[in-house]
Amino acid sequence: MIEDYMAMDMTTQLALIAGLFSLTVMLNLFFGFLRNRTRKFSLAWFLCIHLPIPLIFLARVSAHVGFRYVPVFVAAALIGQIAGGKIEF
Image (tube, rainbow, N blue to C red):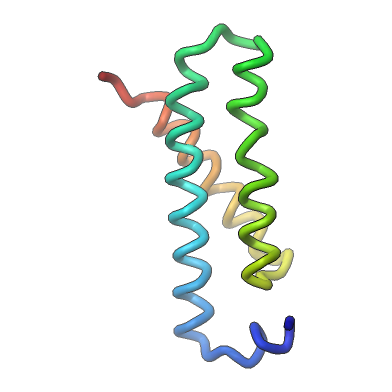
């Protein structure tokens, strides 16, 4: 399975990473929006921050993306949480 990822050409790998990056940002936009509307340090606030983590982990593992890209996804999660907190309706 990991050999499949290693056998991919660079364009396919970058497309996969870009797709997972986009998924991470979009998921965290939603949770950042919800986090901004909850009481700070409440259980709901805590869950809005931490609930996306296992979902992104499962997406990364199922796509056979290695640990070296974890900082990219952490950055995407932060971008999504911060941007989602700034969304106003």
